[in-house]
Image 1 (cartoon, rainbow, N blue to C red):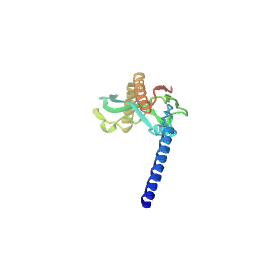
Image 2 (image 1 turned 180 degrees about the vertical axis):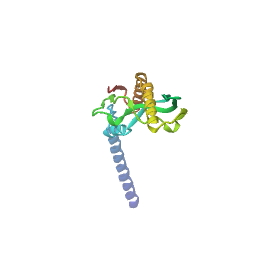
Image 3 (image 1 turned 135 degrees about the vertical axis):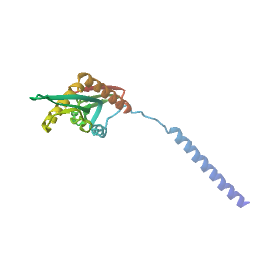
Image 4 (image 1 turned 30 degrees about the vertical axis):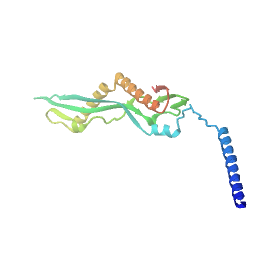
Length: 195
């Protein structure tokens, strides 16, 4: 009987300890709060700015062009003629290494970006491997061919680097930057161009 009383006391003590522990746990959980704070602030990190600048040259418009260029040299008995077709791709865009300090300013969900002016990205745009002699009569020196090349170069610049094409490149650049800023979380985006 004594044995039974001892066991009963031990079980009773264990049950009381379990109730006390359970009561303490319930009270602790009731006092605990779970809250979620939303940070509405979007910040552009220096690393993000540098990674955008590291893109380097950013092409917004490529114009494929071909120019027929000729030259005539008057002779005593006959005229010498050289006619060549030049092919090239003029690429317009920006060089991200030309951005000025403070070119990107963020505040909350708004960002202001100032981009460098649209410019010719590659000054060596004529594909000489595709250049064809259309007609050649007489003897022509390397200097003559170089002069014809320069003439074709200037014609391509005149036909491709026009205000209309620069405007089109700006529109493409504006759309690409807006898309990039939207994916970074900005809602209000203002893009300016350096003149």
